[in-house]
Image 1 (cartoon, rainbow, N blue to C red):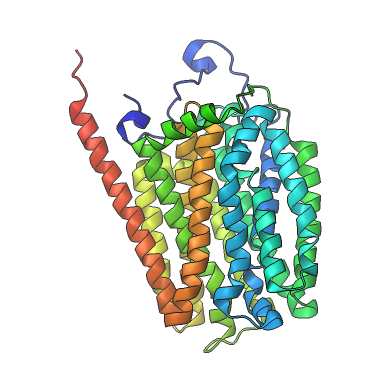
Image 2 (image 1 turned 45 degrees about the horizontal axis):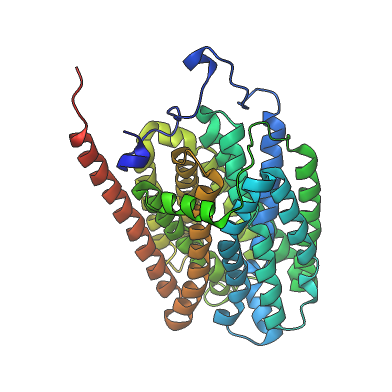
Length: 431
């Protein structure tokens, strides 16, 4: 039985039921692989798409204290500039994935980035907090076409044994975009204000979007699907009925709850007592995203050594250790805590998202879209609940929210382990 039907863990490098390679069948596999034609161009193109997506999506996150001061609002209200963007993405990722099934992954990703960067150039001119939140929601909705389409493109165009590494590189692009966006906005905002800083991010995203379109190879294995709602709903129901996929969706949401809460609130903590750091230094704190770049891109090797569930346990434990360390009043310990949180989050996200692409043998865009929807719902929840917890109980309140989310990840992984043992006992003995 397949992992999708049993809930059992499988090494992500195992062959997919729909995959054929020259070593398996003697028939040449025309999909891309490391060292092969188009692989580097594809990797760089999707890396840049990831950079643009995360830079735009979280462009206001490091600037929330300045946004609060400019509009005279509390942290819980300013946090909606992040939650609206991630919420818009979560709501529209499934419809956009349906469009990618009909019109193609590359076309949808190109259109999504074009609209998102256009809105990004309008964001600096928002006259009120309400207008800013509205523009950010539209921006997030536009970006919804990138994540699910990218994963579906990879699942179709890359050989199964290279899939975890390829998706890890895309996730690494997310981390670089998140890092560079926050670092750039921090220093630019310190000199010229938050409006100029988000405008700079918009211009950088334009360059990434153009390079993406020029570099990404045309798909060779895409087959257009149907836009009929009945077909779409049937595919969604099939994915949601799979216990393994349901667990992976929930794990992605819970990991992102931690990450969204921590990085939405950390600026308030570091600019306040006892640290009192200037905005530029706070923006530079996001250089720890480089750790996420490494942990995401090495997720394939981690799964190869520990298995999927072992990798998830390690990612969850690393994240929890980072949360506890961040409670210290010592800046070096807080920074170490952020390093561990970031490493654990990006490793867990890369493992879970690649497992979704590996498990789904049909309707891959919808399978990835459901993961992305859950993931960004987790981000919106983390941003909002984390800010509310910070307002009520300070940084320990935000950490408590994160620890509860990590406990959820561990619980779901334990349930997966039990399901695998039950399925193994039920397997018929063959002679």
